[in-house]
Length: 353
Ligand SMILES: Cc1cc2nc3c(=O)[nH]c(=O)nc-3n(C[C@H](O)[C@H](O)[C@H](O)COP(=O)(O)O)c2cc1C
Image (cartoon, rainbow, N blue to C red):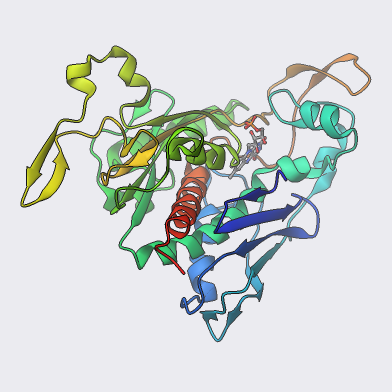
């Protein structure tokens, strides 16, 4: 099924961008975990639309409702049902898209595959479906905290502008979620400039998991990179995923790339982390370092050539409220997906009940 992920700690999601709402069911969450609604809400607030002038102006409070699996702020070990109502859906701007495929979006492919689709706001293909992912990620993050695993995501680059001074304390202090405050200002200006042109821009998001133990994942078809890749691509808008040195590896020699090792007080350590914490599909105990290349948002108000559902050539100018750059909102989504995969791994490896 296309809406489910995980083997032992699982998430299934449902909903449409302009339907009643979006939600998910988390199964396999251990009992007796303290879980307050605020734990989930604070993560959803980082993803919600309308946070600043560089995100979509759709105003959703994204208030989370927990229908089951938690009693008295403690998990019961039963499925946790999460629901988030859609309050500010405006389908009128999408009526023009009923018969026209947005270039670069999933309109054409969904139509080809399913014949019938909910065109309002992109239906199931909308970024809105990442809200239940973030909610489930908040639960996963709480579990990871008990295992001293911490996940940090941030915007590394917007177009040509790249963060240089990485200070994790700066990430939530600017609207781009960039750890370099000076570069964040340049990034914000760039996004506004591109937005005013009726266009969109891409970038790079990085996610790091700290405190991961060695031995998670598996060889070949259970390769942890494959598990992460599958999870990250569920977000949409990701065109490339790199681990450690990532695509820079092609310019390196073995003598530069190999993470040389040493032993200190009986502990195995590494001089570098070009493998991104995963070797042969299995964690080596170093930080898991992932970089995600984010494409420019498909919906732009500039005129573009496309075809209608009858196969006629036409011109499209997309209205509606869209993110001019997806990076700031993908940061919490990427963190959530990494957390969900890691909890699933902990459970599969018997670190959780
Ligand atoms: C948090 C989030 C917000 C998004 N917002 C928009 C948006 O406002 N407009 C849009 O056209 N696409 C948006 N997208 C991207 C589309 O969902 C995505 O590009 C589309 O489903 C096609 O998938 P693909 O890019 O992986 O091919 C968003 C994605 C995410 C994760």
